[in-house]
Image (cartoon, rainbow, N blue to C red; front, top):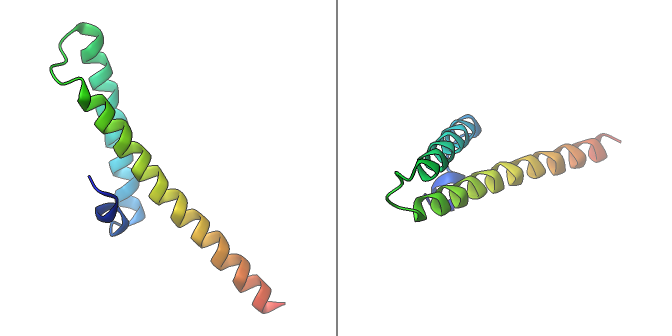
Length: 76
C-alpha cells in the first residue's frame, strides 16, 4: 500500500484499513509464536502500512486544526 493511494481515500475508509491492519498484525504475530509464519517480512510490511495510515490521518487532523484556527482568526 502506497501513501499516494491512502491520500485519496476518505477518512472512514482509512480508519477501517487501520483496524484491518491491526487485526492482520495480531494474526501474524500469533502465527509467528506458533511457528506457522512462512513470510517473516510480512510483519514488517504491515507495521509500515500502519505507520503510513496513521501519518495520513494525523496530517488530516493537523490540516483541520490549522483551518479552524485560521477561520477563528478571520472572525475576530
